[in-house]
Image 1 (spheres, one colour):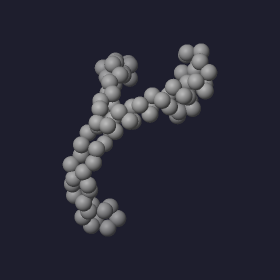
Image 2: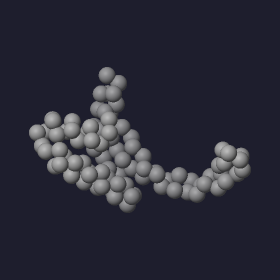
Image 3: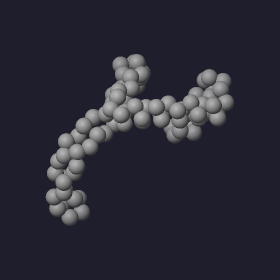
Image 4: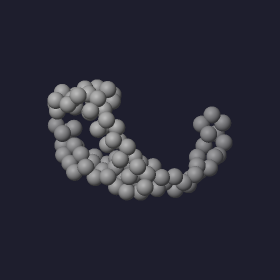
Length: 91
């Protein structure tokens, strides 16, 4: 399912216009992105948690040449599914 399909499904369930659903979805994604970028957790009870996680610097290998390369430390976004979401997926 892509974004367009998601918007269509939400519009059907809520009787809202697709344009309105698109705006709400864009706002939701924007708020989650900005909050995680600031180092905050976003918890949607039953669905899951979006949070930042630090990755330490490490040494890797160039797959083409096999040469060692340094991979810098970075912050990455993590999503952890909530119990209700896991239960729905597992049937």
